[in-house]
Image (cartoon, rainbow, N blue to C red; front, side, top):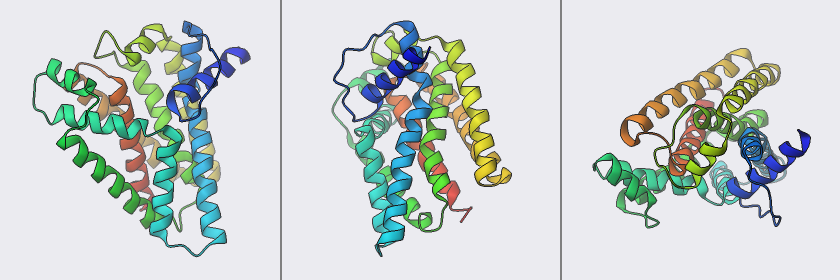
Length: 256
């Protein structure tokens, strides 16, 4: 089991981060399942990097909150290789094309970015910088660490409960080879652990609010994906992570 989880973490780094794993890794059902189960752990690594950068800039420099916000957003994009932002842009192009479902999926698979994707990408980046800058000077480092974690717990739940919109593609390949029941149980376990740790390190009200936001956004986004695309794709997963992170940063404005 520990070897499978280790392989799963390496696969998660390989497919969901900019970190290059120069090793041939197995891709059997147990390993794909472990890869998704390790997504919240990957979130801990990303969150630690963000919290560490914020602590360093707040405690050792006199830079403005705007520069800290810019730095946080850039670090997040670098760590993921821009994967989630790319998914958000492709999702925007597909949805705002106002075409039928099949055409939307074709547009989403086009590597080129269109006008709507560009606008949404700019709004997401600029908006995230502003929101982070508004709260980052006073917010707890624990909450900064938890934002990528909670977004990936939500992604794990979304992946385990939603069918693929396309029969082919990387996301469809992973869904066909993963154990969805085990992943849903893993998501519930991570939610419970996250709630306990948030209550211990912040307050029960903050912990409950954040988890309600994650659960509510998951339910709404899943319903939206099924209605407009017939399921989920890799781009929709990326859009979800980016959207939830922005939502959680906005929520921090009420805690500081």
